[in-house]
Length: 164
Image (cartoon, rainbow, N blue to C red; front, side):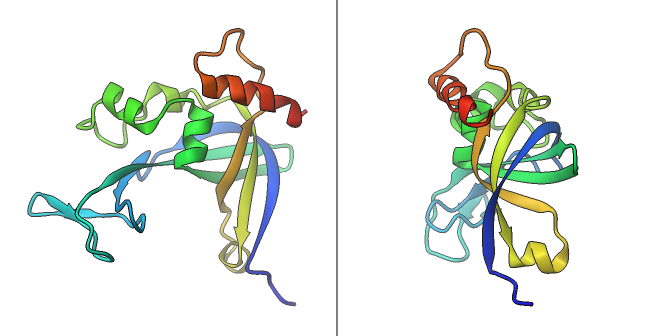
């Protein structure tokens, strides 16, 4: 049996937990997106000659439906879309010096929300039985709030109809 390199599918699930073992963001190279580490007080990428950095969201949630549970990983755009707050705002509100493992309230508030996750199922997932999937698109299917707090929430509310 031949295994495809990657397929995409949509899963509709309720977020039951935010997993935070590795923090909710990481510091990476803006060119190649690889994690950078400080060396003598300065960050630099080992893969390319860049010395600047960017903060990247990596929010991992446990989703559940009638068939079971699985893990979804949301990066930058998808994380910001579902959280409704840009990473720079979260960092300034929470303080960059706070431990990464302290979840901002906006991320904790994901628990209980129902979402449609478009995910990548890779050869690695299939051959190793790995049930952690990278989200390539996300739509909030939860009941809309009476008054959206920001334009992203309004956009998500409008997209909700696609989930029903």
